[in-house]
Length: 77
Image (cartoon, rainbow, N blue to C red; front, side, top):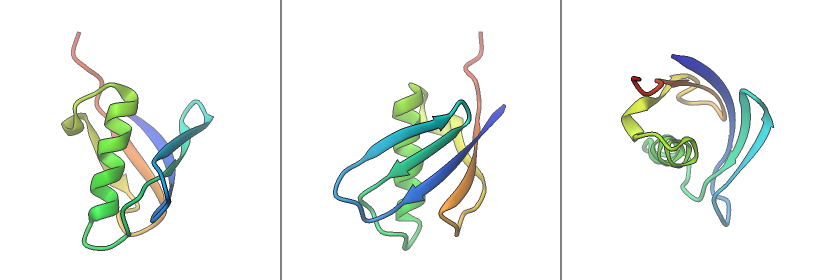
């Protein structure tokens, strides 16, 4: 598993992902940070960006914070 740092901006007008460093991203999502909606949207958006199924992306740290650490499970070879 590898880890990436993500700074999340919620309730934005559109979805976007900006790569800051090799393991650091800034992600804008439309959903609000309530009832886990923003976290679900973040996982969905990052999985699409990384071309992985959603079950390969998980929030390791920062469930209630805009700064998160995601765990990325690499595809089996």
